[in-house]
Image 1 (cartoon, rainbow, N blue to C red):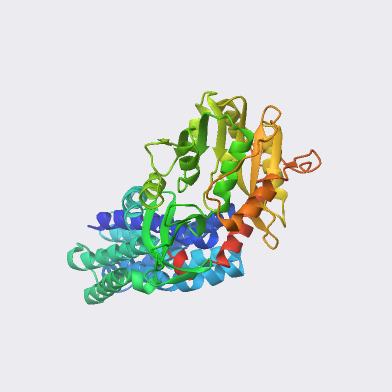
Image 2 (tube, rainbow, N blue to C red):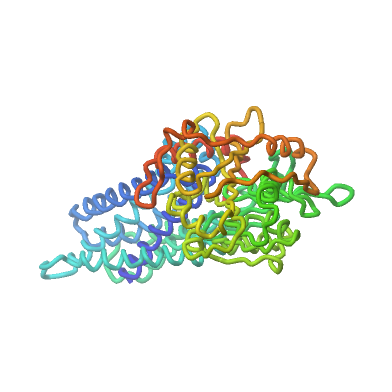
Length: 532
C-alpha cells in the first residue's frame, strides 16, 4: 500500500505541472520566461518538500511510528486541498496578474498553483523512508530511500503519460486538475483504512480525505457555472456563447457562436488559447482579413500555380478557397483536432484537399521540389515555434518549391519594437533573398498581421486580381496593401541575427516580443474565455 501510494502521488506531481502549463498558457503565453517560472517553482517546491519531510521525520515522540504514519497519510489530502484552493482562485486572479506583469505574474501564478501541492506531496518520500527505517531492527543500507524515489519517479512518468493522452484530450484542464485533487483525497482515505504501519488519529485523516474528495467533486460538477463558460460573453464587438470545446496536445480550442438574427445569420469564431484564429459567418465566409490577404498574394505572384502547399490548416478557409479555384492543395497540420474542428464548424471539405497529419518541419525536410507556391501560417501560443523560423527550415522550404516558386507567409509584427521581426527577415533573406513585405494600414494597432512574399529567384510582376466575397470592412485595406509592397533592404535588417537550429541568438528578443503580444491579448479577452 505505501509504495502504491507513493507511485500515485509521484504521478500527481508531474500531472499537476503539465496541467499548470496548459492552464497558464491563455494568461501568460508560451515563452522562455513562462517555462522558467514553471520549472524553477517546481524544483524549489520539490526541494523544500524533501527538506521539510526530512525535518518532520527527524522529530521524536512517544509514538514516533504512529506520528509518522499520520503525517504520511495526511499529506495527500493536504496537497489535494491546496489544488482545490488554487482552482477556486486562479480564474479570478491570473488575468490581473498577467496584466500586471507577464514574467512576475507567471512566477506568482506558479506559486499559487504548484507550491503547496508539490511541497506536501514531495514530503511523503522522506516520511516513507523514515517509516521503513522505523520498522526495521537493522538500519543498514539506504533504509529504502532508493526504492522510494525509484517508485515515485516511475509514478511521475506514468502521471505525464496519463495526463497527456487521457486527461487533456478528453476533459477540461480545470476539471482534470480537480480530478488530480480528488485522487489525492482518495489516497488519504485508502491509507486511513488499509495502511499497514501504525497511525495516530485515523479519523482526522479520513475527515481530511473526505473533504478533499467532496469539494473536488463539487467543483467538477459545477465547473461550467463556476467559470462562467455557459454565460454570454461580450468580446470583439459581439455577444458569444461557447458552442464547443476541444482539447488536444497543442492547446484548447473553443468554438464561439453568436445568437442568430431574425434571418438565422450568425458568426462563429475559432478561439485557441486566448487567440482568435478565424471568424466566419453562417455561410462559412471568412471575416478575417488575413485569409483574403494570403489568397490575394498567392494569386498575384503565382497566377499560374497548379500545385500548392499550405503549412498550418487553422479553420481551413484559405486552402478550401484555393482548391475550389482548381489548385491542387496539400495541407500539413500537426493537430488532428484542428482538422476535426475545421470540418465540423467551418465548412472545410477534406475531400478537395490532401491533408497530411505531420509536423511542418518533418514534412518539408523530406519534401521534393513540386510546389509552385507554399503558404506558411504556423502559430502556436504567441508566435511561430523557434524551430520553424530557422535558416535550416527556410532552406528545406526552398527545396519544396519548383524553380521560380514563391512562399507566402502570414506573420505578426510588433511596430513598437521591431527587433524580433528583423531577426526573422534576416533569417528568411539568407535562403529566400527576394522578399516583399505587405502591411495593412491600421492606425493605433501595434501588433499587426504582416505578410511576406519570398523567393530564391526574382519575383515576377504581380498580376492584378479580384476576389469574391471580400467583406466590405476589408476591401479598401486589402487593395491598398496590395498596391504598396515594400522591398526589404540590407539597412532595414542590419541588426537582424540569423537564427539557426544550432543557436538562436535572437531568443531573448523573440521571448520579449511574444510577451508583449500576449499582454495585448490579455487586455482585451474576457476572463471566462481564458479558463480552459
